[in-house]
Amino acid sequence: MTRKHVLTLLLLTVLAAGSLFGQVYFQYMGLEQTPKHSGRSLSLGGSALALEKHPVAGLHNPAALFAREDALTVHAGLDLSAFTERRSFPVQDSFGDYLAENDYVSNRFQRWGGDMALYYSQQGFSASAGWYTLDNLKYDYQEEIRSDLGTGTYNRDPLAGYHKVWFSGLLHGFNVALAHDIGKYLALGYSYTRIYGSGMEEGFGVIPILNDNKLSSSDTTYFPAAPVRASGNRINLGLTADLGERLQTGFHATLNGVFSAEGSHMLAGMDSSLMLPEYRNDPDSAYKMVIDRPNTYSLSFRYIPENELKTTIYAQIDLTGWKGYAAGYFDSADSLISLFEPDYSPAWTVRAGVEHVFFTGMPVRFGFVYEQNPMSSEMDRSTIHVGSGWISDALSVDVGIAIYQNMYYYKDLFPVEDEVRENLDKVKESNVRANISLSYAF
Image (cartoon, rainbow, N blue to C red; front, top):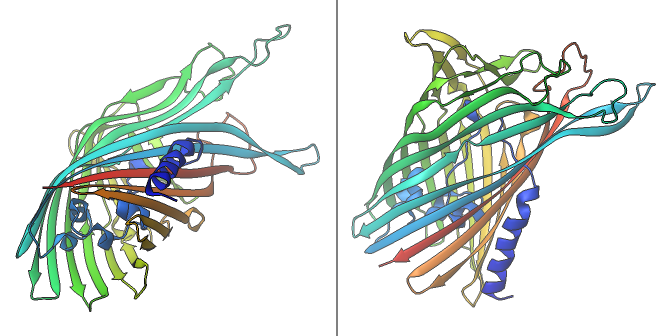
């Protein structure tokens, strides 16, 4: 198979993946983190050492920037994601026996983000600077409300309105990073990222179409809001060590600091019956949301075996300290109104990837990731990664794709008044993410 055919197949896979699913409901609480990667590192499971001499390394292990050569490279990247969320509840017969699962909602939406960065290296040090879309907070939940028009009316199932939960906003980051060597085998790296929020919006409630008292919620008003001045900081520290001609190891720490946004009406809390997070909407007051985000510590390896076909193996383990997570909400007088401090346990993530480069120069990459979820073990997920690339003189293109699916149980977001539901809803989620990265060397 030629390089052209491989790239075409990967792009068709991305375009066809819009019918799959994705986990983002808890992201606005800061409980779902999407690391930034290049197309190459994404296809290899997100390993930091796969970011060698790439500016995105400044967002992970900045020591991977270091190269003992002169170089000037411009990088650009595009992230694309497709999401669908399905919620269902079991249907029982008159004897209480299980019949089937009824999907009462299926939502699809897409997200995107772009990056621009510059990489420079010379003997003794390497540096990078870039503007990145760190995350897209878009979450679009829309559930139809059905009713009837009374006795004698033929149409018994008109559309009465919509339940809606809406989050949006882009988190941008300006990152600067520096790496230098310590002797022949060690390199150190440092980076700082200033985070900015733009287009922040949130909304919760019911959008009525018909004036009908059979709406499945007493709240028939949709409350939109637009938080402003969202910002945060992040520091990354890293070390790489050459343990021989074929083995390299790295250690890095991501110190996430505090993220804040003013004007929020959505407060995070804990559902004591589920021991899972929930949102509470306060349409009458706006709060300053301050999230103390957890730090992540990572150990990674890169090994090049003796193989006739050029092969590189990557492995990495991450530990995220979710015990340090907290979300506080303050009023205009800076008084603490609500504190969500769940005291979650630390969570591990295991990453692995392999890259084969054929004699024609075409790379084929595969990766696998297993992530523990701090909220519930039933939300643990496995992700499959694939990708390839193309190099022509000074221009290189890399494509990476990641796909996951998972399922968990949660309550109805808009319960029918006085309805007793014996079973929790089944929430099925998955996500297809693609990254296309371009680099041009001068």
